Amino acid sequence: MYFCKKFQDYQQDMNEKKYISVKEWSEDDQPREKLISRGKKQLSNAELIAILLRTGGTGYSAVDLAKEVLSSAGNSLTNLSQADFNHFKTIKGMALAKSAALMAALELGWRMQGEISNEKETVVDNSEKLFNLMSPMLADIDHEEFWAVYLSNRGKVIDRQRIASGGQTETSVDPRIIFRGALESKAVKIMVAHNHPSGNLKPSHEDRELTRHLDDIGKLLQIKLLDHIIIAITPNGKADYYSFHDNGLIL
Image (cartoon, rainbow, N blue to C red; front, side, top):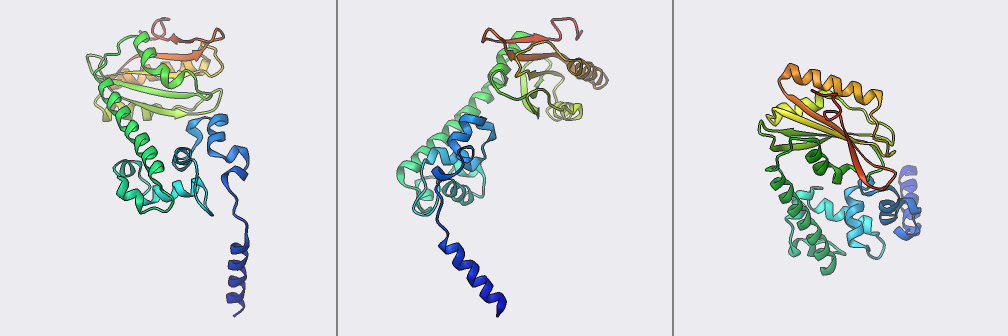
């Protein structure tokens, strides 16, 4: 009886608690403000969807609604992209305008994937082409990321993968992950790239050691490391790069 009474008291307390809207949250926790201050990669799928939905409903926030939308598709963005207006009608709070905005955003995602697929016919066989391929991904982010680009014998892009993401000054890279991706994609050549948020293009001692190590492993596996570039926004405000190959550090 004591347990039942305590549970009833708990339910009453929960019912009496005032609902807190997204606007009343800490600014760092509001999805749109969080995106502006921390960057898009720091947001969860639900938070990104909440920005599209803009509002929730009586007693629930846009984030709550976004979580319900995701749950309705098994928490899969792929499944959600296949949903139509009839699906969204079953979710409380998903008005026509909200449904249309979300469907349009997901369709853009699919079209972007189509562009990436077309990109795989691109030949990347020198530092400038690698820079043109990777600078949109790396130039203006505020933390280090390390990517590998997997190539055919003719230099066509088979795949590209983000290997590691770290802090503002360094990121930890596991060579095994890089070459596992090469073996899985049946690549015979690879190129790698990372960024320096500081704007300094000069390679660190760790950058040099990692490059040497990757070159050695590639020779053992007969997977040629063509180049490693460092990308940064330099003090003049333009994106630029440093190439290990062009500077004679990869033969």
